[in-house]
Length: 175
Image (cartoon, rainbow, N blue to C red; front, side):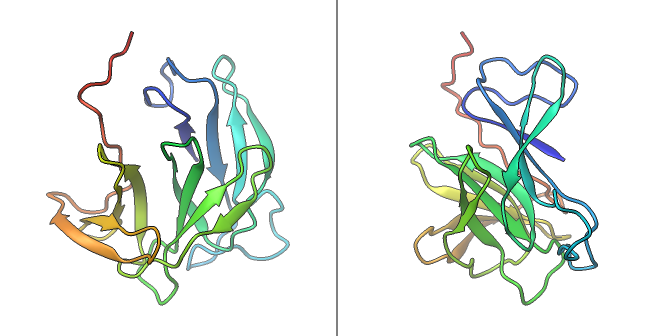
């Protein structure tokens, strides 16, 4: 399970979560070999949760309704939550970005991504461009066109099996 915050600084599990009002997580289990759900096994599969930062308790908001597992969540400059699903292993099933409604958990498909099917991380850059990384032995960094879904390779990452993407604003003031 991965924890994501709306605004502010992200910190590792077990540490404080300063500067955030609401933390979100997406969880799933009982997946098949393609990281897809097996119908009927787990009604909470791929559900959106809020996280109590004082107690660590998770509260289910609702099902996203997506067939593949969520790999990352991100907020755009308008405060809209986006998420990306993937099969992890390369397949013919595309990675798919969604808009996620924080009040209900419902996910609405934006577009099928064209390029890597193993997208694991999303982040917005300084100029509000959308970037992604994938989970391959030779992971890449991609610029994503959210209208067409095309992934344009920017760079090969110096490490494999990327599991997330966080772009840090060097001008961020932690006051």
